[in-house]
Image (tube, rainbow, N blue to C red; front, side, top):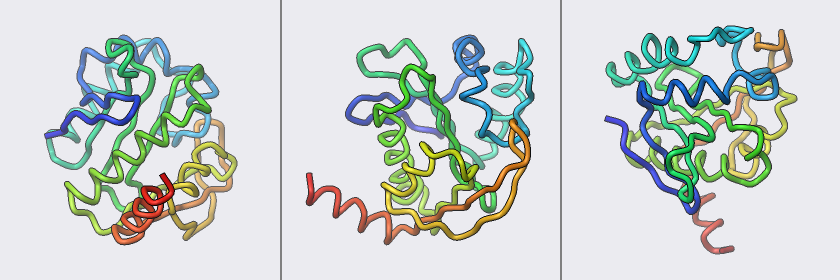
Length: 186
């Protein structure tokens, strides 16, 4: 079961089929999708969000292989502003996107930190590994700021084409040490 999460400013609500309409409205924008894996269809079809939720995300959740949340501001809990997911698949454990008006405010860092806690402290996984396009600087900054290490480079196919890629990772001990430093510094 995917629990609800809370950060200082966000609600992380488990993904539901009812979220398809809002996702369909905000997700299909080039600046959001261009650095996602090329499994995302582009141009995004009119029923893309519903299909993804029904045929991909909810079955993976039911199998206990993935955990998906919509992101909402506490001040506007009915309005979806982004998405974050965890997966037990080898080498690709977290992915996310955020509506453009909310970029640069540290919101995804909050969501990523909450999901790291869930990954290590609740699910008990021994490693979190996150691949990304090398030129996805915002995603890279989150990994750097949260104590992850760059462990591999290569190329991968994204919605925008084949790009240099990076894989970042963190262990539970490294995550706990990063949190302790963050808490000491306030």
